[in-house]
Length: 207
Image (cartoon, rainbow, N blue to C red):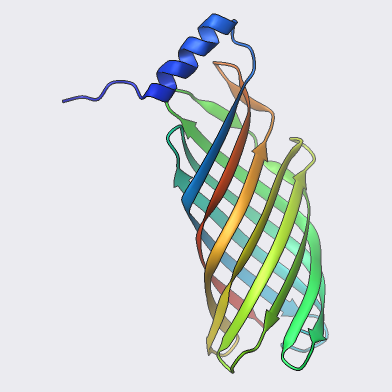
């Protein structure tokens, strides 16, 4: 039997008609998001042991859905960092660079056009070489997209598994907050606020 319109879509359309299509914000939370990452790290001083300056290049994506929203958000980033030893087996350091975010948002019965965002990002990351193959880590990051007045912030913690030279698989938990402004839609939606958290899986190359 065909399903009728989802309650959110009916409520949103009704609210728009009653209010004369004033601006409406979508504010959603997803605790079962999936994040997939790929990162490349190039040491600039010839070392691979998390010391000195380096360049990072990567891609990250978040996918999931809530009662009112299906989303797929991806971002490419290029930055430069400076890492330093912390104790006998640890390391820590900041990274800063440029980030480009692509937004694919699909609320019920509504078509949204959220333009890509470009702007600076800054991150702080650290890790600890517990064994030759196990490296717990944590990373906090924030990005500001100047062309869209949008922002992204997040925190993740997990572990890198070093089973192959120059290559590490990593897994952990991530929380990300997306504030996407300048959204164009037929029913007056102008902003999407999304808190997403869940499993992050990725591949990390270093040389």
